[in-house]
Amino acid sequence: MPEVAADASAVPATRGELLLELSGVSKYFGGVRALHEVDLELYRGEVVGLVGDNGAGKSTLVKVISGVEHPDSGEIRVGGEPVRLETPRAAQSAGIHTVYQDLSLCDNLDAVRNVFLGQELTGSLLRGRPLDRHRMEAAARTVLDSLAVRVRSMSTPVGGLSGGQRQGIAIGRALISDPSLVLLDEPTAALGVSQRTEVLELIVRLRSQNRGVLVISHDLKDVQEVADRIVVMRLGSKVAEFARGQYSSGDLVAAITGAHDAPRPSEGDR
Image 1 (cartoon, rainbow, N blue to C red):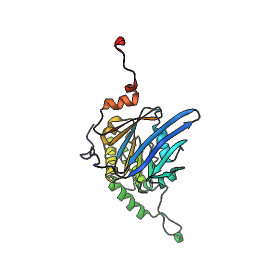
Image 2 (image 1 turned 45 degrees about the vertical axis):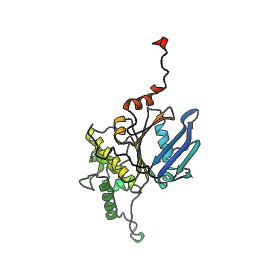
Image 3 (image 1 turned 135 degrees about the horizontal axis):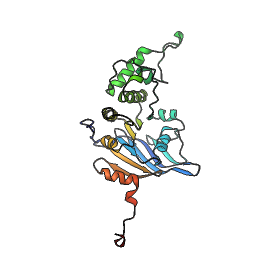
């Protein structure tokens, strides 16, 4: 896989501000335990990868952070203060924005309208609150330029754009509200090699903007390319955490599958 960028592997010299802290978070759906006493810290200027097999609890954890689901026990703190993220809007107000795998783009609308979808800028009440296209386009261009997302025309429907460009526009929409923490759900899924490289470069730029980034992915190569830390989930629990340069691909696979928990054979069994 092509290298992302020269600075993609740069690890922050010191940890930035603690943005989000989960302590002992558990979640049940009836008798099914989806999360069990999960601890997680996310810092400014750091990319954290969240990995694990299907059913490991990744999606539920993201929904808890995003305000879609509510934990049954445990505590969530933002900026050191306990919070209740009752709704996605509450999470966004706390500086947390999530970009889901389906991107939620309207293919028939252009880049500007998609960046401001649900957050449109309007003009004077006396004029009937028309959309302020000029301000929206200027702001959208500024955000996309900050991510180095190249769109030939801001008025082109996004349905005709590449996968990398579409992901950039979805991330740009998240940045309009200037969040401190961005969650990316499977950002490179179903993309070609060149488009995946574009998206990984977007993640690096988010870190360079001094934001916290949580990347949820099944692609271990992509995660290892950009993550400063990798958190491993299995069966609803956090089972391992690795810092860049202090693990191998085999360590990740063993933590994900539980191979390192398997009992070693005794002398008589060999």
